[in-house]
View 1 (cartoon, helix red, strand yellow):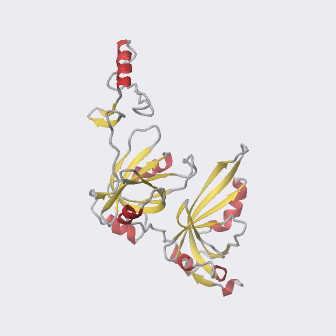
View 2 (spheres, one colour):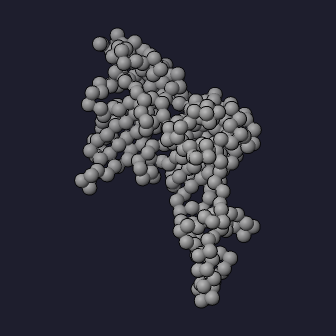
View 3 (cartoon, one colour):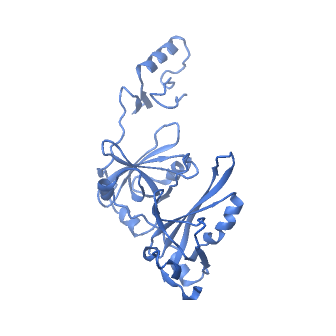
Length: 319
């Protein structure tokens, strides 16, 4: 069908039956490229992109190629600020929240129709952002574990614990009054939270949900580049949009928590906080080792030097 005869629609209205006669106006939001290992010791490249339509609906897209230069060339049309996409077939995918399209699928006929940046349609799209539509009260009743969701909430608490890998404990509350713990991992996301504080609004795209035996529901997220298992997530501090503003108007007080925070035990060891800074609940073997070290004069400052076995903490925090 000629481009001029295509009918403009939105992602929500696309179907398998009508996709060939439709075009969707999309704005490019972000993209990430990662070099992936293959079974032969070589590598290939993957790109994850996020688009938004004029209704604010988000779309995840994936492209793959043998190397970065080839991938960037193939992705160039899709990296325009605003464009029309034709022959799109968005589907559900267990690795992505919401709609997803595989642009490297051999059966895909998806194409891009450029739109001038000065065009009125493009101007209207420039401020659009795919704000998450999550509801923690719904997650509390429907989560089975291992789902992928886009979430947004008001920061009620933010902690940066001392761990072997950069980590942040992020508590988010939404308009339902429910509050959820999100475990943020890796350098990139932890650094992204440097400007976040109690009262900020944070959105995490493609968050992985965990449901524990005690029915605690938590989220976990790590940047695509930092994640060893190549899972994709993205973090945004203070995004724009009506939903984000509605959350900013809430009081940053503790809500009805659907997550049960981890508590250290004397048997397993754990981190506590004292007026001297971080300290650790240690097992008997660790305490015996520490006592022997003191007798041998191998510690200079017993307030700051700790010998810890792996069951107490993954990495010793030495002065």
